[in-house]
Image 1 (cartoon, one colour):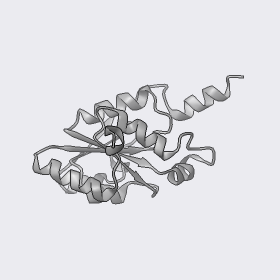
Image 2 (cartoon, helix red, strand yellow; image 1 turned 90 degrees about the vertical axis):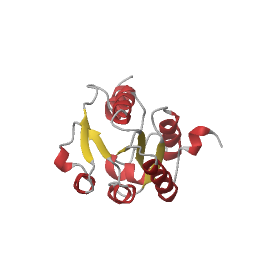
Image 3 (cartoon, one colour; image 1 turned 180 degrees about the vertical axis):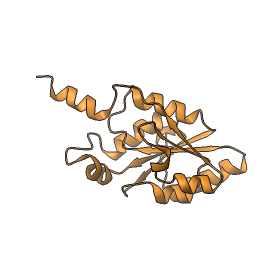
Image 4 (cartoon, one colour; image 1 turned 180 degrees about the horizontal axis):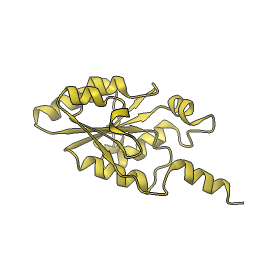
Length: 161
């Protein structure tokens, strides 16, 4: 199995990795999203997220979850493509999929030390924030790169007539 595919785990497999990292004294950072078309805003966000700890877990919305959240035309890239692209980033240590609308259950299983979202979220509105803080962790928001979003990229492509 190549390194990229080995980073993609089930929740159960990831829990085992998480426990190993914890035994080694490593701080685990968690973030989530659709990451439908990987762009510089995502790369910047994920790189800054990883800087908040020793290991970075990225939970990706499943295809069905993306469709519910973004509409019937999404995702552009299916979850296997999105997972491989995410796992290819050197600063991402693990990728896990979730089919619910939020990663609340995965957060409660994995108990990350740091929970990250973009600064378009208020800390008090971040799913799992209360749980992470009650368990001694912290919640951070990362400034987003202005002008970059999958939605903007899709609209730009649509206008290339």
